[in-house]
Image (tube, rainbow, N blue to C red; front, side, top):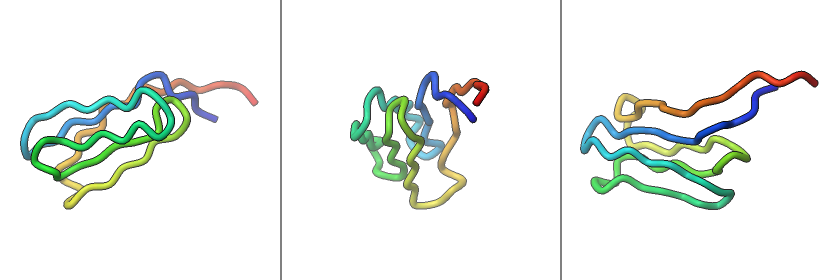
Length: 64
């Protein structure tokens, strides 16, 4: 199981770095190519093309 430390991504198209800090805290880059959501609860991604997304999230393994 993984614990989310930071929920972040960068858009290759416009260079924006996004961070979702809480649940239902959706962020979209300035060119509209990527969107992230979920804060430390879940990693949700939506992008026009997968190659536009650079994953920057930090996660750690936790015991069950």
